[in-house]
Image (cartoon, rainbow over all chains, first blue to last red; front, top):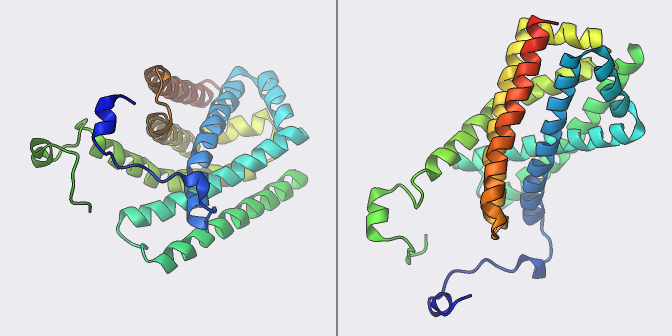
Length: 135
Length: 128
């Protein structure tokens, strides 16, 4: 910091590492982390499409990675990140529209995001496992 | 809000923010978010139906006009939303000289990924 900066008192963010984690703060940073994680999955989506365009051999090798247990764990994480960010995003859209700012509502919608993203992830995987077995 | 503003009176009067483009960034982030709600639900539903499918079934699905159009729209919305979101990440957390390199990489990377994904989709749709 220069002298110039220290002379003028600037507003400072709270040092969040000294606070006990709360639902609101965990959801806030989790929302950002899931967004960054989904960016990596979006690269995977393009690789998947490119392999399909390249032909059956390339597609089969990518599918081979996806059906391995590592691939399945990564895909499961991606499904959870997607639903987490989707539900959190809908919560944010309500805030942007001016609704849901009462403390009770903030906690209710926060727990709703946790429950909905977990349930949707499990439902999607149950459905896809049934589809894969049927095939 | 707080009474002490950091903005100059002229800046406040013009109401455009410091960089003059914050509102558009904020707004397009929301517009793409709204578009992504149905698009990601369609995508997840489709991948569930495709679970365990081979190349032939995947191509047959993506060649359907409905799938082709929605996949292209999904790619546009995803990478536009991603570019705006990652830009905020860099602006909030990177304060070194790498900031401008990263901001450029985010923009160019998202553009390249969107173009690649769209061209792959169209190739499958029109060539097979």
